[in-house]
Length: 149
Length: 350
Image (tube, rainbow over the protein chains, first blue to last red):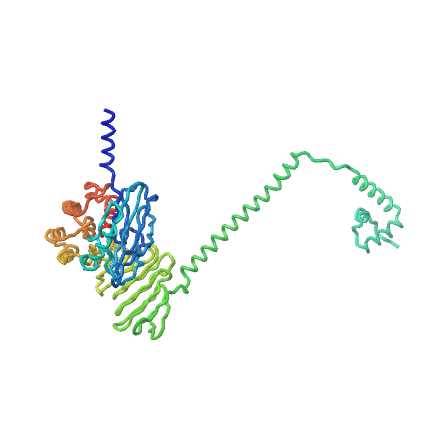
């Protein structure tokens, strides 16, 4: 009987627990005037203590046929778990932003295509792990072919 | 020779504290006066006896009472000094604030960027000028100007524009747009920059925007970065980057919409917002709305009766999940906390 109760509790915990993931939005979503010029903002969900999460981002691009990767500085908002990505990659070429994060034992990743000075919400992809190189390359290829328009 | 007795000078004479002249006179008198000589001997004896006395420590209670007595007037003096200093600081601060906010010298820079704009009834042909509260910038069809708004940003003044500086204070940067077009770029925290128009007030919430006003007081607000709140008599439209909002005198701000919203939605909104055409327009808006157009739907919640409000709530709920903490019942009652939470969550789709 005790084992059954424990099993039910464990299953309920898993069922109720929210997956650690990223939610992206336009800069206005952060409600932070300092982020108004950001390329986009994002927040974490399913992380009990956002202050202890590890968040990173890279800009991945193809410029004149050459693959490039630039480490990005993620700006944290005053609101816990809310961050901004400011464009520091060149205007030339096709670019996307790869987000990755860890919270306790959970991982999350996202690929956010960039068009012009904004992000393409509809073509963004979200993972429960960092995006792989092949996934990033495929997204860049699609971006170059105009599939994200 | 008659000389005065020196009784009052004897102690000083014995201690050698008299000036040479006085000491000489006293010595000469004492040499001739037997009374003074006798008196001098008595005084000297007494002084010698005092010197022989051993020092005796006073009881602690005496020192404590002396110290307490010394402290009393000192703390009183300190209190007075503090009070005086505080008063002086208050007076100086008030004077400084008054000087900053009222001095005629607080004037913003105006640069001519085309043609010959008029600032305070003077035409600027070259360079720039300065403008203070109560003064106007006017441009004709050929002229343009750039107004430096204190330390917080700038305003491009387009052709055929009349713009007045209402307040030029650190806590309130306020313009009044009578007609024409301005483009504001503000880098300050929210609610420091305001533009009054014939149909309301645009309140900067950290933004860049364009505001066009016609002679009839109708405005069009287009926001390119951040947020603008357009307010009139308790009505408020929150306009984020990428969205626009029309306003009418006597009606106030209309319902904001995204520039890329379906045309049919925008047309229906025009009818619904200002002409009160009713059900058909609302049906079109609900049908055409995308996830992002929950901006429009959320604002509509405040402007309709409870039956239509329920239809709008259900449409938003069908477009994007209703977050925790937002109940249908509270939303339909226009509970501010509930709708504010919902708006903050919906903003992630805007």
